[in-house]
Amino acid sequence: MRNRLAILTVAALLPLTGAAASLAVAGQAQAVTLGKVTVFGTVDDCDDDSSPDTVKIKAGSETKTDNSLAGNSNSYSVTFKKIGTNATVTAKATVTCESGATYKQSFDVKGSPNTDTVKRKQNLEPQ
Image (tube, rainbow, N blue to C red):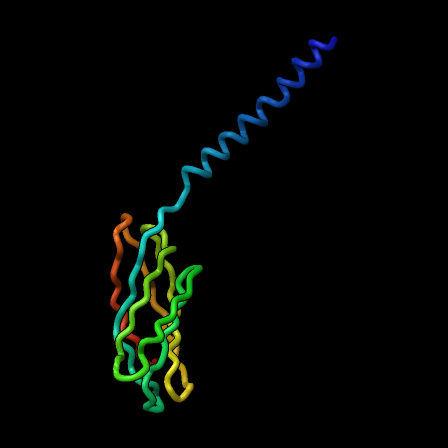
């Protein structure tokens, strides 16, 4: 009787462990490869003619800020490290000018087809 109970218990547990193992393998097969994407370009002045001060861009789960615009540079560059290969995410840029005025712009960013760094030029201007 004990042997029969042990056999039934093992027979009941085997399909469950097999299903869990196949789910674990499927989860590993869908791992996303991440690559770097550098977004760069120029930034126009705000509508009130004040100069740009910072650019903040959110793409996917990352937010990057370039504070180097103050002074005489209207160029920016930020690098994202969590965009999946061949993935396309919507980036939302916010430009803050010296006066405190802001403007926003959205654009798509596509991940690299491999693990090489992708460079994407995107000029920002009030819409």
